[in-house]
Image 1: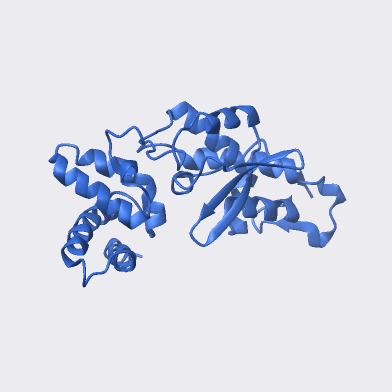
Image 2: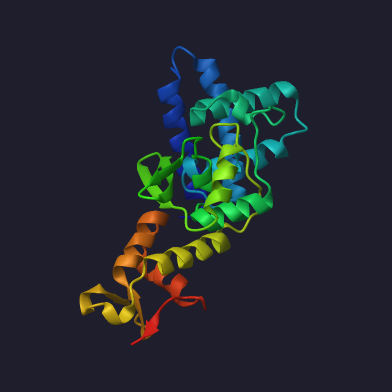
Length: 254
């Protein structure tokens, strides 16, 4: 999908949401104003980030608001109101000078993402009660539109607990750093989780093995599926490549 098509899709999604939450006939001026501000945000997203849904774009709201910091206070208040209506959140979450704005430090974000595998567009959906304990294991309950995942915490359980307990807002973070290597943190998580789930290769029967065509390496198909469920990445070939190219892989040659 090219940039123009992506912009059109996002604008259409924006209009549909605003029409559901506002009555364009009874609140015509409000609808037009909110649409104008939301479209400004969407155009900035299309120019700066590869987001195909509003849910993914949510992670970049704070940088956009910061880019408009020199505009009048009234304009920024309308920005906040429009985005609050678009995302169904409190307006305070979109005011840069609000105590409701909470952002993690880069080191905190790195530790959290390496321990959970979550990325920007997922982090903005976390709530104060997202940490769940079950059978002596800790999970992050991730609820997004049309998706619910229980994400295992693979490392730093106590640190992750302290991070969540230390957040005073809902969602946990209303602003995220504009530049952060989520991919590297998620790759680390993928390998760590796979190593936790994988069975010894010599114990696997043929239909429990996953092979890449380009390599003789054997992966545990059940462990690979567990990683897919936890990360929401169901491209098994892509997952296997991520696992297979890292030196710490718990795998065995056939």
